[in-house]
Image (cartoon, rainbow, N blue to C red; front, top):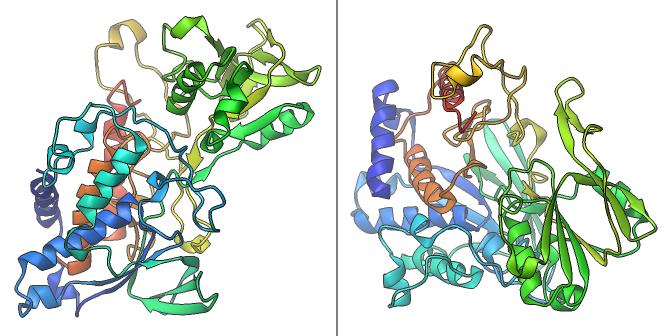
Length: 452
């Protein structure tokens, strides 16, 4: 299914743009940053492609040479197991006993099923460890990961004289090298670094209890929560998961502070033993060292930030032993030169006079004006066209979009499309055509009430 879907995308591209095989003079030398799920899937696609071709054929000889750099000592990215006292580069952003809230049926590969892997039926919701085992078994087939340069940290990627210069530190020898490539693929993940909002950290300076990010809920978590009162800031999947985990471990009380009131945790209607209370609002002031004032917030279009809603009552929460920041994760683009970075928070504008087509809500809401600046799309980033950085298509971002329900499947399909770029099978459109196509896609999203 995945391969057929990717081939469909390729055929659609061929109809819009000329075939690119003639424009590529020979095999490409490609730098791949990261060996998490995205990086593994591209290497798996390349190994699978090699397996199906005659080594003496022109198509085989035109396959790219991909050098993958991974700063950790093993593949898997955020899915890797946490090890106490891990070496630099082996840090992870996923707590060890996390369970997926996406059914396994939405992350199953067509060429290697869960039944193939586990040899028996499995529940729909799997643990982090089970997902990691599955990803490694499938994507390491045919020696796909044999040549990955582990313990190699990419320090900088620059584009000079139509080539990428990649500065890499070998974590074993400590030596620094500059390597040159035709193309560069960033596959370091959109969930690579914990986000700790500065305004929350500033507010928490007066708090005397323990503060951790959700990614740090590790081996001491039971001692941190058993018989304690805990506040979780954030109401998405991590908050829901950690609240349930705390209840299982004997927490006295959990308060979840929800900014939007639309997250998975806030919308949960019933919690075990009534030990969890979801509050609509954010803490804005510390009271007597371990207490907080919490108030609802709203988005100010004029000031372009959240502000406290004075029409809503302030809620006081006392005697909090620990605060957990379930505030999400962000990209690690530190190694990419500014001229090559994509903007994961890129905004865009709808054309003047744009209105929504009639839909199920038109009668009750009419034509609702859109904001002047709109957030990134659910299916694309404004400055990236089908994984190609529009300003420099030789820079490729192999990553899922933030709102996808099937990130692993998306990455696998993306890997095949990216491979078709590297072999010249799919041509790169002109810059104006990519911008126009993205704008059309973003506007189409705006016609869908749920996505808007």
